[in-house]
Image: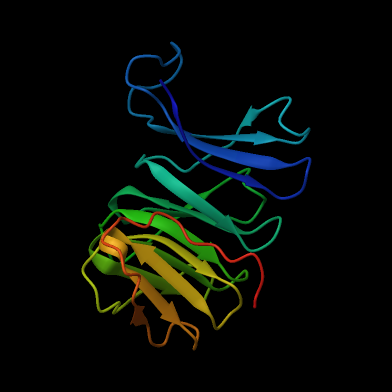
Length: 193
């Protein structure tokens, strides 16, 4: 069956759903090479329409994040990053310096975003994704989630209780002690305090 990987609502009416096709339940008109889909709703999820992700290639995309109601990124397998500037209607594949699985992305604004993934990978763009730079995380554990409360303060979490934080916009990341060896799969702060 299909898997639903991420959901993003811009407001109570308009949202996006990111997922991947199951192996055996594709409709007849879906190409076998297509593995991921994007659905869009403008009516609180009553009707969902298909969005246009860039193909080929067609790596699974796991997470998405938006800077505003138009500009956002989606990340996934093989270092794949796609960007939209029209609220998710169309997407463009961006070049990245890694082929590692990217688990999460955090959009700061239209120019700046962060992505994290396997092997302690941390990627940053400051120019809307024209260039993605790999930064040293200081860890080799898989990083599964990243979240920024503002342009300076952010956190990344992952395998074996890994927690990293930055207070200077990612110029330097430092480890925080979680006290657990469990996999941490997500991080979010409800306010800046």
